[in-house]
Length: 440
Image 1 (cartoon, rainbow, N blue to C red):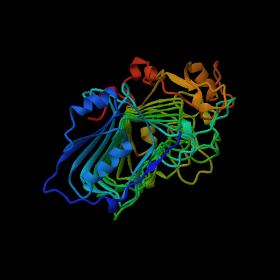
Image 2 (spheres, one colour):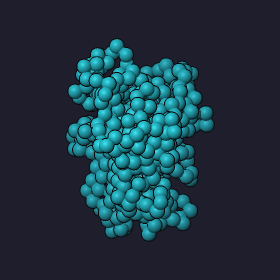
Image 3 (cartoon, helix red, strand yellow):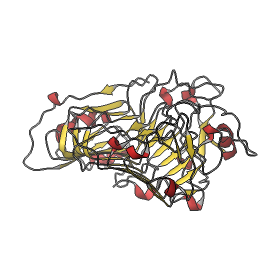
């Protein structure tokens, strides 16, 4: 499959601002699909539009928002579309842009986990799936919600072991913010799957000292070092708050399967330049062998940090530690020559000056679908449900207890929509992604 990157220049899309803000809706659905037929009843080509492809919808959205205070909503129906999409040099500083996938065919319901919208990229993917370009691209509010980003087609895997071949895979994030200037940024209800190097970095620029970022209700599954909190500076402003809430962070891998390597934790915590406060609440962290959170900076250099009401389970097997409570933090905490692995315990609140309460340890019993390659062409195989004993072995844990060598590295994970990794354990269901919290 050939992928194309659609880049837009504001110089070619200048439009005059209207006297007042308006709301526009753009429907994206494959031609002659049920969603297309339903959209025809909603479109007037004045404030509502239809396009068969996202590549056509984005230029229209830029035209409508550039230099205005308009609210522009791109609604994308269930299905698949190939391509890479970007915005560069757009002045939406007074406007709002919502890019919302997961719409069911009648456009009455948005359910990203039952009516999924998947963005497909083929072998040789040259860039992120969505790309917001540089500090000349501004939005008063930017929302990206309801998409499945699977990097596997642009990765290479060992046909015998199913291990990721990192040196020949596309080590490009799935989403790239590139210092886009925002007042309010929302990344919600997405699935980031099989990334060979980061799902994304929270690398925006704050429009003011009141800028807020909400990363919420996303699945981060089987990515290499999935997320880093490292915003850029902009005109002396600092992001007020980054809220990382109700996300499921499962089966994510270190940069190298080596306990002495850098970049081992699932979430890379940053220093005070990150934000005034970082809130990590109501998430599920399970089977991340290099630790749930990597903490390399001295505590005195950290932002205000709240880590409350999260579930942790078995996040330190890279360090030969198979305890369920291990791997709350893995880090050097400043000058330490080797990693310190911190466990979930009541004493955490005494050891660190952060707000930490309500965190629990339990097996969430999440279903996992790993791909059985059995062929050199990794794009032609299907996923199969894997029992948890096999997962334990993959992460270097004997079925009878105790640790062994890690079996393989970031094996390709499939997405089984009938068995999404929601917890099967009743007491764990309140943690991580919630269908009731889909962005409205």
